[in-house]
Length: 307
Image 1 (spheres, helix red, strand yellow):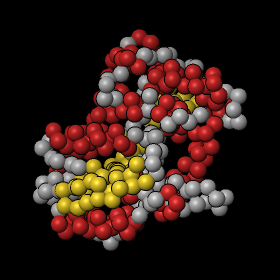
Image 2 (cartoon, rainbow, N blue to C red; image 1 turned 180 degrees about the horizontal axis):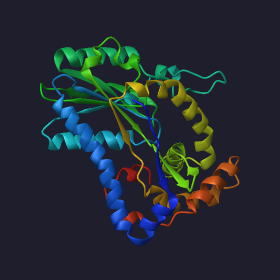
Image 3 (cartoon, rainbow, N blue to C red; image 1 turned 60 degrees about the vertical axis):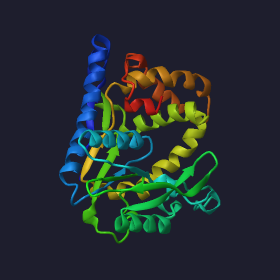
C-alpha cells in the first residue's frame, strides 16, 4: 500500500479554529474515529481467517492509543481483543544491540527477544493461551510470564509495536493469519504552495512535548535521540509499509493549534540549545496558528497521549 500525504492549508485551519473551534475539533476527531471504525469492522468481518492484527507505526504516531481505540471498537462489535506490546519483549538492558559509536540502538528489531516472541506465539496459536512478559522501562528490566493472554474462537489478538510489520516478527507462521495496520501522521500543513509543517514535524513536536512532561527530557535530549529514531525508521519500519492492509492517519487537523500552547513554554527554556535553529523554525510555524484550549478536547482524544 502506497503512503500518500494529505495537504491542509494553514489559512483554512485558522479559519475553523478562530470561528468555530468546537466544531473543528469534533470534525477532526470524527475523521480519525472513522478510520478506527473502518479497520475494526474489517477485522470482525475477516476474523475467521485473520485473527491476529499487527499494528505498526513510527515513534509518536499514536500506536498505543490507536490500538486501545481499535480494541474498544471491537468490544462494541462483540469481539474480545487483548493487546500485546512488542516493547515487552525487549532484551535485558545489558544485551541490547549497540551502534558503531557505542550507543544503545533502541530502534533495532534485534533489541527484541525474537526466540521468546516466537515461542510465545507458537504456544498461543496451538493452545489458545500463553504467558507473555512485561517490561518495566523505569527499571529497564522485564518479568517473564507476567501477562497471561488467552484467545478464544471468536477473539482477535492485537500486537502493537514499531516492528510489528517486520516479517521476522511473525517468523514462519502463516501470513494469512495476520491483518496488517500501519499508523502514521500523513498530513502536511501548507502556506499556499509551501509546506511549513511536515508529517515528521508533527511527530517531532508530539515527542518534544510528551518527553518533556512525562520523561523529564529537555528539547536537546529529545533531539539527540531524534536523528537515531529517523534513521531507525528508514531501516526497520518504512521498508515494510507495503505489507499494510490498512493505513490510519493519526494527524488531527487542529493539533498545531493545541501544541502552540505547549511548545512555547518549553521553547523559552531551551531555545538557546544546540538545535536552536530547529526550535526557532518550529516556533515560527506554530506562531502562525490560532490557539485552541486543550479544555475543548475530548477526554479520550489521541492527542492527550502527548500533552
